[in-house]
Length: 207
Image (tube, rainbow, N blue to C red; front, top):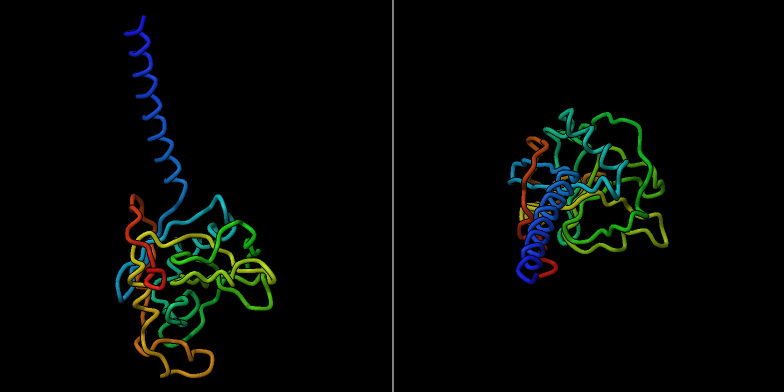
């Protein structure tokens, strides 16, 4: 009976491995991936609809209608974050849809490489099209004493590009855009992609 039992165990283990493989593939397919093609290189994002369904649906809506194509990173701060999604090359503001509800209580943190919704500081439910990429652990942006900022994805490839953008020199512009880089960086195209693997996502600030 032992050989038979061993054979059954082998088939069971093989079946379990196949099941886990398909489960992992199905899970990864539930997390949409986005390619941000910028004038400084490509940044790949993975989104979390299971944690931030409203923010992810909102973001994909803008991506699918090519809203982000041609927009600039209008606010960059070294070892902090880079922000985009609202302004064209001449700082002209794009019209957006209605703002969405804050989902900062989803258990996700503004950690190195995370992607989150930008919003007005005094209104947690004011996020629309603008988003930012953290290039440091910015836990002070998590829900706590204030309402926090909704994390809805992470960088899975291209964190070095995001860091390079954050390090660009500033000071040429004033007022609202005092943190805009002197050298404009555009999103050439934002599109859905798939099959990207996680690659070297550790931020310089954390190394």
